[in-house]
Amino acid sequence: MLMTNERRPAIRTLRGWAINVLQEVRAIHECEEHGWAKDGADPHARERAIDLARQHPPAGLTGDQAIAEVREVLDSIGDACPECPPQV
Image (cartoon, rainbow, N blue to C red; front, side, top):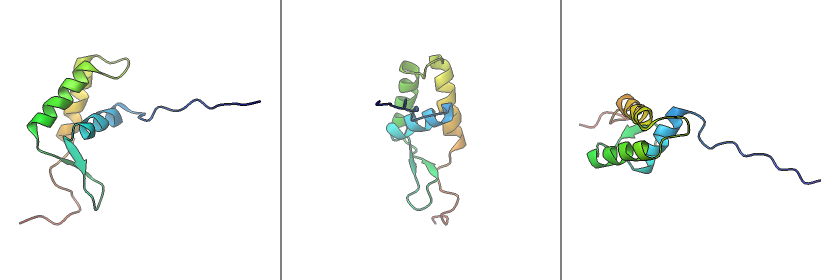
C-alpha cells in the first residue's frame, strides 16, 4: 500500500512569513558571513513588501494585520550585522 505524508507548510510562523516577504522583495538580506538579517535600506522594496502583505495576507489575517507584522519585523532588523566589525 502506498502512503503519502502530508507536507508541512514551509513557513510555520507569522514572523517567518514576514521575513520571507521581506527577502522576496529584497528589503532585507542575510549577512553572508554570519547569517544575520540586515535591512537593505531600500524604501521602494519596503513599499513592495507592504503592498504584498496587503494584497496577499496569510490565511486568517487581514491585510492590516499582515502589514503590522511586516513593519514589526522591519523595525527589529538593523542595517548592520552585530557580529561584523564596524565599517569606518
